[in-house]
Image (cartoon, rainbow, N blue to C red; front, side, top):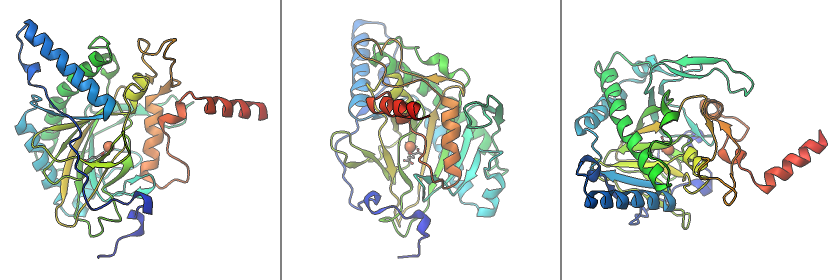
Length: 367
Ligand SMILES: O=C(O)CCC(=O)C(=O)O
Ligand SMILES: [Fe+2]
C-alpha cells in the first residue's frame, strides 16, 4: 500500500467496507410521461402515479433516480469530457483558477468533510454569474458580495459547455420541485419564488485512483445543505447512501444516463420532516478514477427557510425555527477551507426540541 497522508484517514468507525451492499433500493423513476402532452384521463392518472412514486422515494429513501428525464445526452457527455480534459492537466495549470477566500469558486483539492480530507479534486461554478452572497458568516453583518466564476483558458470550450449544462439542468430542477410540491399536496409552483435569484452551483468532481480505499473516502459522510441535488455519475460507481430503515451503507449502481436526486436539508425543513435529507458518501478505488457532476439547486442568499405554512399547523407543529440560508451557507463554507475545532453548522441546530428549549432556558437564567 502506498503512503497516505494521515489527513485523509477516516476514524475506524467511518472507514468503508470494501464489499458492496447492492440492494434493490433507490427507486428508478421514469419521467417520460412529462414530455407527452395528451390531456386525457389516462395521462392524469399516470401523472398521479408518478407523483406518488416521487413522494414514496423521498419519504423512504430521501433519494431517487430518474430516467427519460429530457436532459440532452450531448450536453451531459460534453461536460464529462471537458471535466476529464481539465483535470488531466498538471496541478500548476489547475491552480491558475484555484479558489480562495476572495474567489470561492474554481479549482480546489483540499476539501475537508467533517474535518477529514476528501480524496478528490473539484471545480465549482455558479449557475448565475456573478452570484450574490453575504460577505461574512456573522449573522449581524448585512454586507453582501458577489462571487464570479473563474473558467480556465484550457479546455477552451469549458465555459460554454458548463453554462449550457447549467441551463439544461435548471429545467429538470424546477420539474422535480413541482413533482415534490405535488407529492406534499402543495401547488406545483409553491417553491419557485425562492429560486429567482439562485445560489445554485455545479461541481465537477474527480476522484483519482486511491491506494488506500479502506482508509480514505472520496467524500466523507454528509448531507447536502441545499434544496435538491441532481447528480450525474459515470459508470465507475462509488456513491453510497445510508439506508433509512437500518443505517446500512448501500452502493448506488450506476444506471447509464440516469440522474440521482436527493432531498437536501432545506426540503427536510420545508416539509417539516415529511422528507429527510439522508447521509451519503463516496468510496474510491485503486483501479479506476471516477468523475461525477452534482448540481446543487439552492435559493437566493437571503431566503429564510422554515417549515412551509401549509404543512406545519396545530396538528403538526413546526419542527424548526426559521434560519437564513445565506448565513448558513457562509458558515458551512468556512469549515470547508480549513480544519476547525468547532462542529460544523447543521439544521439540527435550528430544530425545536424540548432539549433545545431546556438548554436555552438554562442559558438565559445563567446569563
Ligand atoms: O460524487 C458523488 O457521487 C457524490 C458527491 C457528493 O455527494 C457531493 O459532492 O455532495
Ligand atoms: Fe453530497
